[in-house]
Amino acid sequence: MVTIKDIADRAGVSFSTVSKALRDSPLVQHKTKQHILAIAKEMGYQPNIAARSLVSRKSGAIGVVWPSIERAALSSLITKINEQLEMQGYVTLLSISNLESAVEIFRRYQVDAILVFGDQDSFSSFNQLNPLQIPILTYGAAGYTPYSAVDVNRGQAVRLAVRHLAGLGHTNIAYIGEPQSHDPLQTVKIEAFREEMDALGLPAAHDAVLLMNGLEFHDGYMAARTMLERSPRPTAVISGGVDLTRGILRAIGEHGLSVPQDLSVVSYDNLPQMEDLGVPMTVVGVAIATITSVIAATILELIDQPESLKTVYLEPELVVRSSTSKMN
Image (cartoon, rainbow, N blue to C red; front, side, top):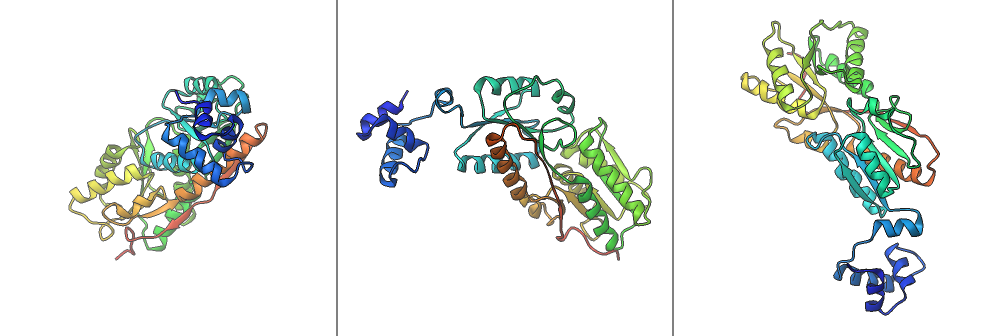
């Protein structure tokens, strides 16, 4: 294994100079720093997290507890977060273990902070965690944990979708996004849908919200098939997420219908790929770039101030594209 001493011998400088250069210290001249970094790269140097922690009391690593490797929105988030943290000199360690196991592993590695992507399976687990000296930031679980959180105003996002469709003249609007098992994050959206429909004088039928097994492609597909068999058929649908939206679009196409001529569709999840789903999708939510920059900045704040407690709510926006149109 290549060490800092090996790099120092090769570069003809002191151990201390190499250490400062690898930490991007301003105390090392730019030319010398670039020379040392080039040698380190050539020699295949990898920093020893444990050794770094003993010296600086900081590991330079952030643990991420990951609920699913399949959800498109979460995959986009972690990719961008990793990029932003790397720019600040941090590495991310990803765990798909349950919350307690993942946190214990990260504690052993002495990570500087832990990011938890909240889902319905993790809410009860938060209260079972032993007190830690490591700051924890949750995404998607504000109000359900005793830890700092970054979250999206999901209810407002759905309200924006309902208002948009109502403004286009739609009165028979369905919502696809209720899993069989209780999920507080989805419940917020459903309650907002019913409340906004009622506020606009468009009381939703009892079956306007379609029940599904989960929140994946197949669940959206099956729910949409059920919806399309109804008479009268809804003229518009709001999807609870991008994976559901893909399934909804498949079902609409198989029924020989088209978007938005036969059915207007609005999707939760403001992702770049929403422009490329066969029809450019009208969406509600917070842009991925905004979410990831706030998460990264908040993690860094918590590392500097581990005793602080922060809750940040992000306000969504409506992005109108060609998947919605006025009633004929």
